[in-house]
Length: 183
Image (tube, rainbow, N blue to C red; front, side, top):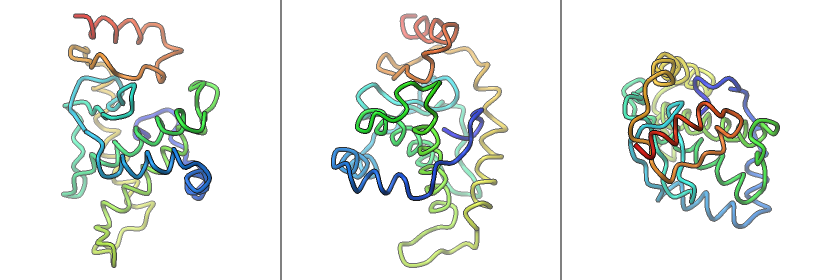
C-alpha cells in the first residue's frame, strides 16, 4: 500500500499495461485478482499484505478505507496483488529493498483504482469531478492519518500464510510477525 509508505512514488503510467501485454501469466492473474481476490481483515504490519500464494489480501481491521463516502478497500488490495504479481511473474521487485519498481508500479495501480473509485466510474462516465491527483490526495491523507497508530499497534492475529518479502530487511519486524503467527 502506498499510503503511509516511505516510498509513495508512482511507476510510469503505461509500464504495467505494457507488462500485461507481454506476459500472459501476469495478465491472467491480474484479470483474475480484479474480480476474484479474497479480501480479509487481519492484523498485518503497515495496514496491508498478501498471502504467499497471492489468493488473499489482508487489510488491518482498524484501517478505515472509507474516503468521501466510498469504500476504497479495493484500492489497497490492488496495490497488494499487483506488487505480488510483479514479483511472481515478472521478477520485478524480488529484492524489495533494492528494487522499488514493483512497489512503484503497484502504487500506480493503486492510484488508478483510487481515481476509478472516487470518481465513481460507471464505465461510461464519471459522476464526481475529481482529477486523479485530487482523488489520490484525499485517499492518501485519509489513510496516512491512521497508519502511524497501526504501525505501532501490537500484532496478535497475523495470518500464517502472510507473504514476508516486504519485511526481509527488518529482523525486528520479522520476529514480531513470527511471534504473532505462533502465539
